[in-house]
Image 1 (cartoon, rainbow, N blue to C red):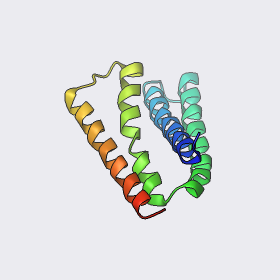
Image 2: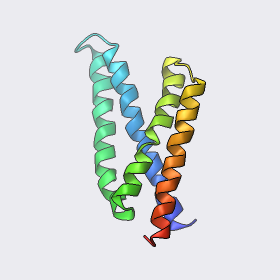
Image 3: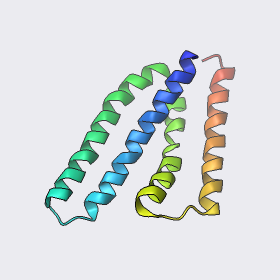
Length: 118
């Protein structure tokens, strides 16, 4: 597999980890403060953020900062998917169109970097 594609897959896996932190945050917020479930979900939240922070530093060596940050916008897609899966949130037409626009923007940023030879 192309090294650049593999790096992009790793980046998007990392975005999923970051998105999971918001799921754990919402679960923690639904628990009684300092209950065992609250503590577990808060721990999982910080674990996700720690893993994300560590590997984000590693992934930056493979991309220009503009490309890496543009791809972080994929968090919107994962937020919608995870919200639907874990919290039965509705996936509306507006949300779908928004995600499509975000991904078009990501593609434009990646292509502009390719044309620069980066």
